[in-house]
Length: 123
Image 1 (cartoon, rainbow, N blue to C red):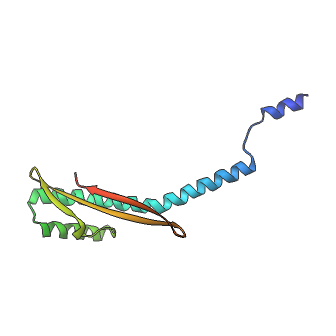
Image 2 (cartoon, rainbow, N blue to C red):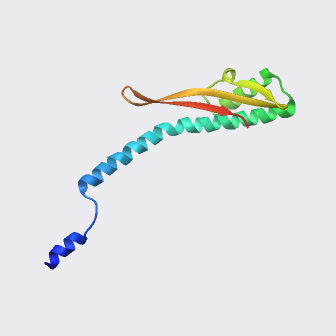
Image 3 (cartoon, rainbow, N blue to C red):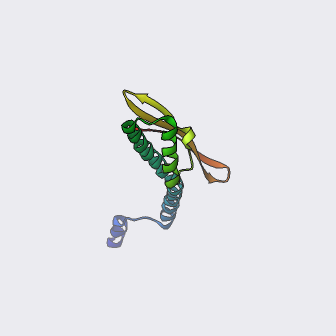
């Protein structure tokens, strides 16, 4: 009788439960490792757009100079998703605003891919 009560108090995870949760965590990790480079590139694009816009606002640069400046920064940071020609340049309230929108397609398994739309705007 005493042995029966201790069995009811024992709690834990079974081997099959452990395997199921392990597979779920591994799949989430793989997805994260595939998506992370796209977000790192997005933050790099946004950082460069902000830097070029700030520089252009101070110097009152023309469009070609702005594109060249972004192109040089993009080459240094190894940005491949957009080029300097993809940047939209506008002037708002005396300051330069740069924006770029692009789509990143991340292959997952076989013919399944994850498509993410990014839009970066300088502040």
